[in-house]
Image 1 (cartoon, one colour):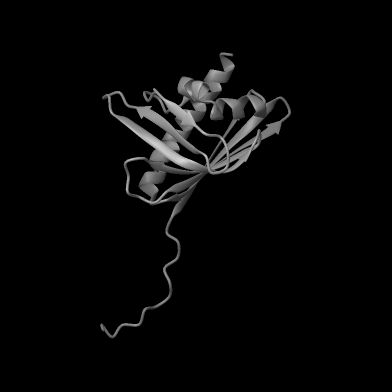
Image 2: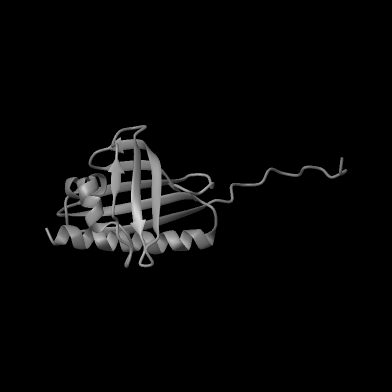
Length: 154
């Protein structure tokens, strides 16, 4: 026994990131691009990262895996489980690097129609620290740039 009192419980130290992008496409079109493997492989990843493979079981409790191929040839798989699937407006899923022992993070993607365009809102929660949040922010902006370019190209 150390003789110290335990003190108050530590607050949740996780970090949340919100990234928004208005894209000239319908919510239906964007939801399909986000959830169909053949489409994800065409736009996923920040600049210089490509997606050589995607697997999606689009249902609550269904699993997904998305490959990120880096310029040096390294491939990292992001994997998780769908918690909510509400076409074409909302997805909620766990998020973790497949080889990582870290606890899963959570991603919520909302597709909010605004007339002829759709606002895509990505909320990434349970991030370990600000440095990881900053890397995710860079990645999400790159993904949304790729998504916008993909749907614009038809």
